[in-house]
Image (cartoon, rainbow, N blue to C red):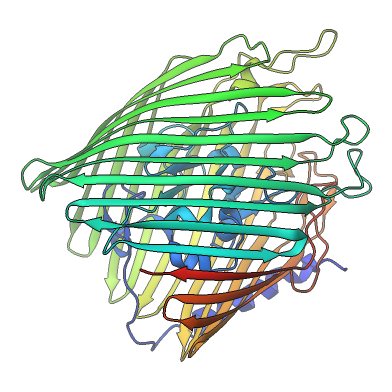
Length: 610
């Protein structure tokens, strides 16, 4: 198939975004204003914030037709999802053009434990277990410390509410993909609970293209098993104790060509935490969390390997209400340790942090400030902060601006991965953290079921870690990213419309070349309609030309992919779903030498007794 012509993509996406924008006025007020936690670490209505935030509720996530978390996030404004190969393969999120490891991923307030290379395996978390997802675009190290250079993604798992009830689903589709999930949760008196299990198998498809040196003429199967649990007890109206946990095991084949025939990977991720939420008086909310996250990654074949990252974490945050505004004070501790069959020079480090925040409304004006100090056992101290301002100058209209600093710590692989005898160093223990400075601002309008916003953004990242000509990591470069995002959604009668488009210039200042695998223009659009017991939807995702490497060669052509969905409500608690992804069977690449999946179809039966 012929890839989507990238030279037409800007006009195409602009037209889609304009459709939502022009339709916005005059729609009845039918939407709710979601409460957001991630932007300030306190519960605030999204409309009151200066931050650039998106929220996906769990029901909308599972109805979207996306097969994984990453696919759903890739439809949001300013978010580019990249996964060379199919489900189970490593994936990246580029928030406003920043690197994949510049996105901090949290699960229920706790850092998702990364691999030894520093990347978080967010795309393996099952959709069935998710209550909602919050995405904050822009530097957020002033609140969260390392890695929040491009933004933060926080995944909230199901906590249980209302009368106890069960959910279940079973699905089947292309590549002999079979999946099933079951859950039960709710509240009994002052006790809330939720448990979800999920399993799926697939024969997969051949993830390598014939021209790849690692190509093998076979399908690359994958399998996933997961379980999540939440249990909490409200002692009275002011105090609650709880525990949370999740476990995900993913097995995936990949291609090694003649170097490593039929290799296989297995990743085991887990997280467990205990928390205490306490209100001491009307003006003091105290939240304590203690947890541990684990990420084990193993490969077999000609070059077997094993690594395990363990993160022990403690957080204590306090929200104080006063006549001078709302104050946030917190302390954090994070200890990382690495276990591996590879002999690393160092395998432990820890980080202590203190943070403070303040926000207040002055009539139509909102101000927010954050300051954080991190003391890392490897790199010493780092101070980051952020400022936000919003002006509600007319009914439904808001001007906003944000600025912040950030940093990203090198991974254990960057610092200490052993070198082969006679070869250049594979790691660099002298690396220093990358540091960023970002700004964004724009205009928002919201009225009833319609909203529209335009956001300009700028991010400069110093000490960028790149591989030199000998493939040794170095702090060689600066990256400069600037761009514009347009976003809109509305209703026209029973039609639901949304569209977004991002134009950006993610540039490596050392070479003058674009950062790898990032498009200068990308976006998404969707339309849906409910007609009685039937609901149909169509979603488009598109991206312009990208380059696979930092030297600006090996271009990958632009593309546009259409996904279709049809739902039928069989009875009050039962629904059947049909999904056809990549409906026009487009051939495109998200990594040079990696194949994309062709047209696929899935059918699903869903029971929801809530």
